Length: 157
Image 1: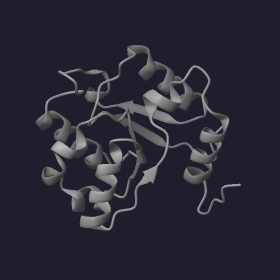
Image 2: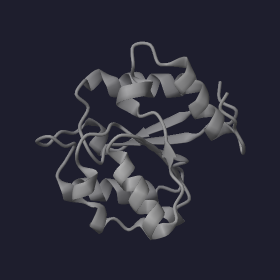
Image 3: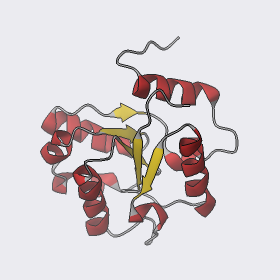
């Protein structure tokens, strides 16, 4: 059970879910911990090798940033896609929204650009379709993720 319930918003600004059931498993796992989950439209969409065309994926980032109820913007997955859009993302606007953005893989491009342009802190952590939807999620990954999200300070042991 969560220390305090968080509102997750699962967004796919890069690749699409290769396993359509992965989104459902991730939602179930997060809700079982007492969190609320919202799905951006990109979490279930597919266009070529991406979740959606560039303009729609950019709009998804803006939608999540504009959602005052979102505590954690959780990337669905990586895959190529962020680098195509970095120069079009309003990182200052995203940073001012004060949400926690979390993921890895292709999300690293977003993280470095956010840090360089807006001094924004992001979280390298699990993603919906790789980690939270795994048949057996890594207990270490889950413990460390929520240790960081649920606490002001967290030491990895």
